[in-house]
Structures are given as C-alpha cells and as structure tokens.
Image (cartoon, helix red, strand yellow):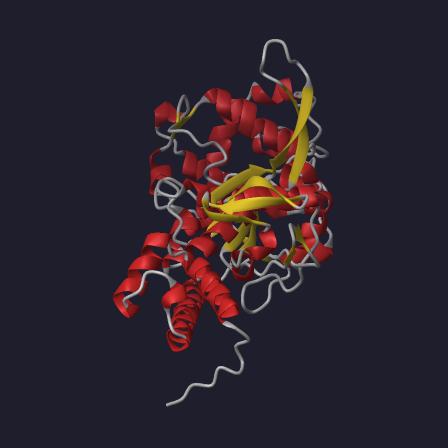
Length: 439
C-alpha cells in the first residue's frame, strides 16, 4: 500500500514530532536508541526512511494516548469536604490518623508513611494569610561572614505545594504508565481564619467539573508560576535570547518552558516562560478537606458562596466507635469506678435538656465528643480546668441556673457566683451529672 505523505511538510518536522512524543513518554536516550536498533536496525532517526519515520511517530503517539487514557481512568474522583461538629468528635482523626489511615488512606490510597509528600496539612488562624496559603516573598540574609546583604526568596504556601505535587504525580504517571497518585490538602480549623481572604482567587478553582478538574481556571503571578514549575521538577539552566532556559528533572536539553510537552498533560498554556490565560486549575487527583468546631468563639464568617463549593458532613458525638474510650476512668471520682464515656453522655443530655439557657441556642455546638479530653484517664484537674470551665464560660455563660440545679442549689443561690465557687463543687458536679435523668 502506498502511504500518503502530503500532510507531512518535511522530515525535519516529523523528527521534531517524534522528539515531542519521546519526551511525553519520558524515554531516556538509551531507551530510544535500543528501540530504534531493535525495530529498524538503526540507532539514529536520520537513517530511517519516510515510511519508518511515520511508523515510529504513529507508534509513539498511540502509546502516549493509551497511557493518558489509562491514567485518567485510574484517577480517583476528588473529595472536597468540610467535616464539622462539636469539639472532641474526632473530625481530624476521621480524615487522617495513625491507626487505619482514615479517609486519606482508605479512600484516596495515600499512605503518609510511604509517600509523605502527598499529604499536606495546615491550620487556619486569625493571622493566616493568602501568602501562607499560596506563597510569599521572604527576606533572607547572606550566610557569608562579610556579606550581610539582604535578598528575597519566594516560599511556596500550603496550597501551591499541594497543587504542584498533584501536577507532578500526573506527569510521573504519564511518564511511567502507572496509576496517578492522589494528593490531599487538609485544613484544620478552617473557620478560624478569614477564608475568603486566604483563598483569594483560588476560590474560583473550587468549582469542579465532571472530570474532576476545576471548571474555571485562574491567572497566577509570574513569581507563583516560577515556584510552581520549580516544584514540579524544572530547574533554570541558562539564558537564550534574554529568556531563561530550563531542564526537566535535570535531563535532556535546555529549552524555554513553552517547548516542554508536560504542560499539555496538566492543561497549562505556556508562552515562552509564562502561564497565559486562566489556565491554572485544580486537577482531579487533588482532594481538599477542612474541619471546623462550630462552637469556636473567635471565628470568621463563612459566606454562602464559599460554603456552596464544598460538601459538608456533620460528625455527631454519638458516631464515635472508639473502643478505647470505654477504658477511660475518672481518676479521683467514685473510687475510680466512674467512666468518662458515661459522663460525656450525661453531659450532652443535660445540655440538651437546658437548651433555653444555652448561649446562642445552638445545642449541637455546645455538646462535646469523647475526645474532648483525649487521655488514658481523666483527672480532677482536667475536669475542673477544661470541662467545668467550658460549661461555665461557653455553654451557660449568661444563665447559671442550670448549674445551680445540677448542684441542688436554689435558683440565684449566692454560693455560685464565680468560677472559683463552681469548681469547689467538682465532686458533686460529677456525681450528680452521672445520676442525671433526662427530662
């Protein structure tokens, strides 16, 4: 059969196309030479006929398509969820832990002991900023004794670190023909920081399409993009016509970033060395988790537009099936025969029965989980300084009559005015609470 080469302008372009496919597949120079020798009896492509060149390009292109198809099928659907509930219910433990690995290991297949780089954790707080999340310039001092000059270095934030690792895993899976590894970004106390300000334009990326990629992309600064490509595996090697040149994983020739096909695999459009258009997106192998205690006082308002972009799961204190909780005793109470688990259950019933006196009226916010005090035994000091302070200061801070009732005092009894008064009766508080009968 006579092949039609009219669509191929010249051999030079066809060789360039095979170059691109070799790079997509991640073949080393030795692997390329061995394949040419074993298949065509030649070690360089210039010795191949036009028909052989076309066969080579067709084969390589087909191999790349098969790898891409296989990898896309094995990528897990991303999880984007906030776990919320009262303190001590094990929300963070549910996501990731040292016992069974949590959702991160059981669902996403991330073993933090083998691939710790695939699990990135952070905690939001009032001073946490977009710079901590995405990246920021930090002043540095030269280490040399004589030179104390200051220079600036860009440090990646937690989100940029997670995003680059997800991109890196996609590229490596394409190269090696393996399953794409998932990445998880875990944000504890997500409502203790100003989430709208922290996420900034990243907020737009939280809308996911059916393929798991962000439905909409965003622009990022040149500094952020340079750090992103560095984290993916690119290193600057020189300058070509005023443009920096790079090597990927310190292999092959140096080019401007536009020449590297790996950016096609992660759907980033590059012109020379800059990301163009709104081409930065969250890939399907990056999952994002958040946790929040809705009872926290110092929290920022989370607007509805931000909330809509997450799945939500309420973690009820009753759902905790940790068998070790049954062994936790109340040291110093009832000859050490009282159990912490029983006290927690009666505590939550007592809170519910007195919901009219609870601050803000949000009962589930003021209940506690079995891990509110997370020790092998619960001491008198922990009862007084943690449990009793919580119920005094956070639960019944405006109406102390339920506490007088549990201590068998009359309404407005002057024996219970200050917190110091309250903790004097810690023995009676524990005993009466354990004997409390639901109304």
